[in-house]
Image (tube, rainbow, N blue to C red; front, side, top):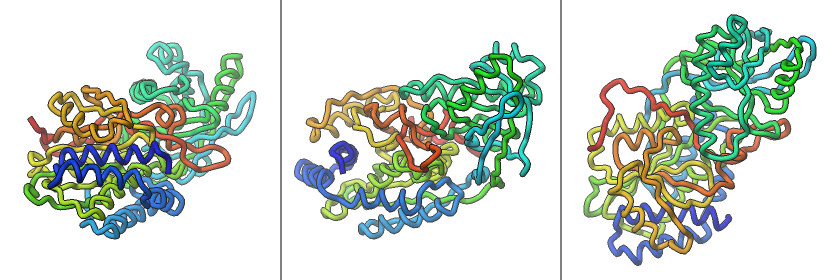
Length: 449
């Protein structure tokens, strides 16, 4: 286990310890940090989750196995644990996806269906393939009526950082709206990741999407774009075999160590358990799910007695739109005012160099105190600005003060998770999860003022 990953665990443990306030704070925090930086079963847990269960989209049999795995890992650590159901709005799973470029030049192109994309028939859907440029309003205006009934190929910039990822999320939603308005048969997004990497992230219409929407490997998409700009006429035959269904019940894993002096007050540490299935979900977000379990394990093993209740949650439905964390917020609406602080952990295993504190300046000194015992692993810089979109922070921050870690670049956006290459289904690295749109609520959104 690398020192970077150990440092991530220790940092999260310190944040928890500072908010919880153990009976003998300084000594207990030192013991917890030492335990977290030492040998633990975290790596074995991660190996079991990724190698034996693998990719685990919510609604899949693998996800159900992951829920049972998480439940048993908490219980084996001597931590009280149960599952909490919530409702997913629709089932969507990819069985297979393939595409072939035809016309003046023919070749196979690897694709991945975007979440909630419409399926095609077994023979696929064939339509003209048109150069949609960057998918801007001007590009669709240039295509005019030709876009109707055609697949529109949209170019993207190569992804190099986290800021680029959020731009990509936002622009994809705008491109989808323009394509729908133009009557396009479907959208083909050029993968922003080189070396044949594919990925998924959500579209704005989500379960209502009635058109095929896919990501094509960058090299094949760029070849098609060059051919179109050279005047060649191309078609695309897409075959998307998808499992779709209506609302269904999914489950979060919720564990806790009850507090002594103020058990009704809750400090929450969470990470999403689900992943897409283009890889094994190691960095988005298996490493952090294992981290949360290990934190609970070490507090229990050391016999530490927190003043407040520490609650550990493995969320589901995160990749489709943070439905698991929103389900938790709704389920626990009556006790939200007693949630003291939440830490949501996502975006891979890069070294934590600070925390987003959600535009809540009162949290900043708390985080600073939490990081003091591990100042040698710094430096740290808090970003006191709202962050909307990735992980479960959006749902949580609508209910209570939430911190979310910022990370160093090596395992953020450049080689992004949810990736599939021609020869392997292993996961690369992580950088957030979902587009900036919180799941809908059937009632008023719980808030904390």
